[in-house]
Image (tube, rainbow, N blue to C red; front, side):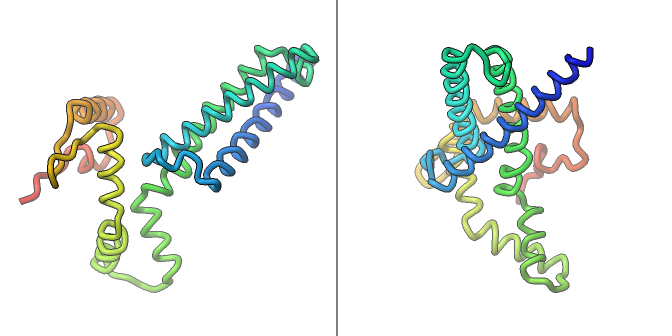
Length: 192
C-alpha cells in the first residue's frame, strides 16, 4: 500500500511537470503570435494546447520505444497523465487568460488600479463604454462571432444564425439547471 501512495505521488508530480511544460509551450506560442489568424482567443489557446498535447504524446511514445518506460511509468500511464494535465490546463485557460481577455470586471479594476482615484458610478460606466466598448471591444466580439458562425454579416448589418440560436438555447438550458443571479446576459431586455 505504501508503494501505491508513492506511485500516486510520483504520478501527481509528473502531471505537475506536464502542466508546466504545457504552460511554457503555450506561452511561447502566444509570444510568437502563432495561430494569430484564429480570432477567438479561447480557440487559439485550445489549438495550442492540443498541439502541445500531441507533441508530448509523440515524445512519450519515442521514449517508451527506446526505454520501454518513462520515469518507471508505462506509455498508457504517461498518456493518461498528459490527458489529465491537458484537461486541467484547458480549465485554467478558461478561467484565467480567457477571463482577463473578455472581462468587464478585469478592465474596470485595471482602470481603477492604473489611475488610482475615486470615481462615481457614472464615471466608471462612461470609462467602460468609451475606453472599452467604443475602443474596439464590440467590433472584436462581433468579428469573433462571425468567424465562429454564430452571426452572419448582411451588408453592414448582422443577424443571428441557426447555430447561434442553438447556442443560446443551450446556454438557457444550462442556466435553468445552474441558475445565475444576474440573468440580463441570457435574457436581455429589448432596447427602445
